[in-house]
Length: 226
Ligand code: ADP
Ligand code: ADP
Image (cartoon, rainbow, N blue to C red; front, side):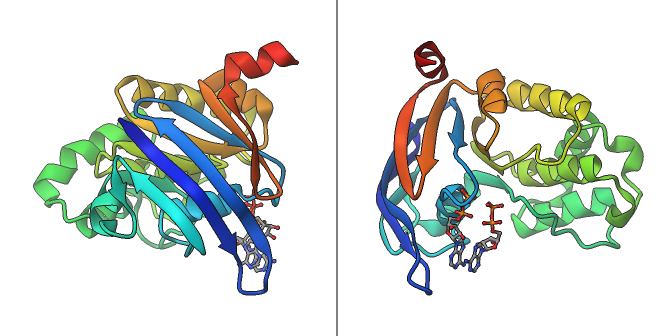
């Protein structure tokens, strides 16, 4: 089963800029997949389309076999998204942020509670559950984004530059957490511009530049070329 299947995806922004020039991409279920590329390559645009935050110009996107055009709600249920920018309600408390997200997903509080508690514990945020999000450090906010993205136990987790601006110690603990949920069966796709991050975490990689996929291979094969 493919977690993600992209065919001939194009995006031309309203100003005429061609950000994606017809990309093809497959990510297998259970994979830990990296999209690597310099700033402006088209990584966020691609993931934005997958999450239906950005409208595509043409091409097709399927998530676990569901087309985002035909079955958007179903496709959306299967993905959790960690965007680059923090977008919390500043005054909402950590626990409430996760439970509010559960509500948006249509999960009953009684079902969401144990999941929220486990996620906050695993991410080292349980002690902060009654703290307003504005009081958190940058690293804690990043981890809260991950907890919120996982509350509906999606099959595919998408992270846009998850460790940007995170110090090395915290980066390692976030890597461990992502590896653990991947081991438990969650497919993960992340964008990064650090080859080192892709190398330590991921099995397969697509390198994107100027809106085109220039390599799509296993990390092992990529490293053996260097
Ligand atoms: P990234 O950090 O992924 O490289 P950017 O810094 O390029 O992202 O863009 C940050 C935000 O600004 C994104 O939401 C993107 O869609 C938007 N953006 C980037 N370039 C332009 C542009 N030329 N015109 C309008 N919006 C843009
Ligand atoms: P990446 O995530 O790889 O840094 P993006 O997908 O954010 O790249 O951006 C790809 C290109 O599209 C960049 O040149 C960016 O400036 C441009 N871009 C992004 N958003 C917009 C927008 N809303 N309008 C015009 N150009 C944009």
